[in-house]
Amino acid sequence: MKVGIIGGSGYVGAELIRLLSNHNSVVVSSISSVTYKGKKLSDIYPNFYNLNELIFEDEDSVISKCDVIFLALPNGLSEKIAEKILNKNKLCIDMGADFRFKNNLTYKKWYGKDFSIPDLHHKSVYGLPELNRSKIKNSKLIGNPGCFATSIELALLPLISQNAIEETEIIADSKSGVTGRGRGLSEPSLFTNCNESLSAYKIAHHRHTPEIEEVLSSVSKKDVKLTFTPHLLPINRGILSTIYTTPKNRANIDTIYENYSKFYKDEPFVKVLPIGETSKINNVRLSNYCHISLHYDEETNKLILISCIDNMVKGAAGQGIQNMNIALGFDEKEGLNSIPSIF
Image (cartoon, rainbow, N blue to C red; front, side, top):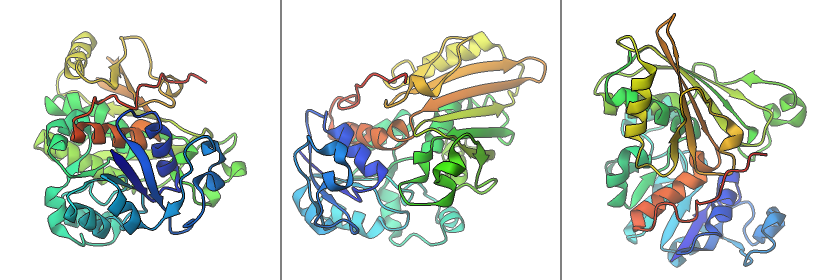
């Protein structure tokens, strides 16, 4: 089966190509880029010299040649392309934010525009497998979640689904490697600004906040509110989210651990760590895993969750491939079996 990537020159596109090179059921046959049209992939990313040589084409060529198309584009550019893909009855997986929302008003508030093709948003599925696996199986249009959203939602789903915490008292503090800011040149991403430093950004107005709130509210059937602050770490990849919650009743950490273990027992990529262990970025690096550790402060009745993912894999390309596998009926782990690198 042939896979195409529209927007293949960015970090997410490159990571899709890297991971899919180990997939037994598909092959990346076409990639597109407006900036690099006509150039070889290895001209942009020399690490791909050993792969079959790919040349950047236009998007229509990718759509016509491929059975599955990943859109790795800037926000706001995916709707019209997705419509063309669906008109050809092909699978479309959008790696950006265009299909993460069901509420047009929320999308407009945070992204500055209305849905261009509202009907597509009725057809699309939010691509968090641990929440929407059955819907993903029957979908031709999947909106891949954001990286911070993935780490925070996976940590909170067992609690939110049981109405076990105060829905409006959630605080999330997340730290991400610099690849989370994309490949484009920006002053905050310069080496001298990142190295030996730690900085918060988009305080109180990061776009993953409404995404998380909309998803968790749909699960809770109540209005979930989140205080979220992301930080930039001087590392290439990885996210560590520390999430502070208030249980509605005094908590028992052993019972909470049992509930989490039961909730995720059949999930191939979510590991709930034993009580006393703490999630660390280096234990999930280069993998599609999410590690969650649980900690309870009896003095303040706060349940603290630590969630770690690789922002480029489970937070982006890996989760997109997981969604593709589910939608096409492949083994969910196909192409994603790599063991995490601890250094």
